[in-house]
Length: 161
Image: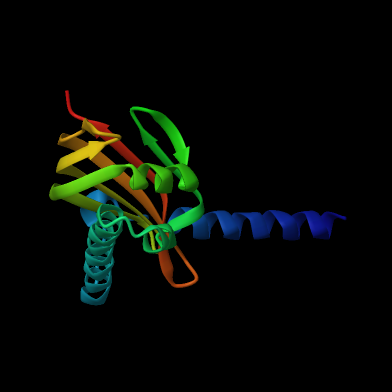
């Protein structure tokens, strides 16, 4: 019993020494990303920017099938009218005429290799159910990569005041 106790204490001492002996890099010492990692991040960011344009073009052109292919099964959209699922987003698309749009200040944050958030400002010329909805909006989309394909999980769209 005494032998096991001594062995256990010694093992604990060695483990603690190893753990406390390792330096964790401080923010000022954090290693700089490798060129390959930077390239991968830039490529993913460019992919997300392209996806935002593609999904908006599909919406603008009322291409329901193409638009829906960008949406995850559990997709939700949040706007001034409330929370909507993919079916409601497709229904809104059918009654919306988006004649022109432009993106500004787009930022893509990579949360993980398979999760990204795009935030941006979009200026639109549009009508919905015959009512003018043109204006400047703030938007955000959460993208998740599944089976090699990026899908929109959540999209928010709020008109500026």
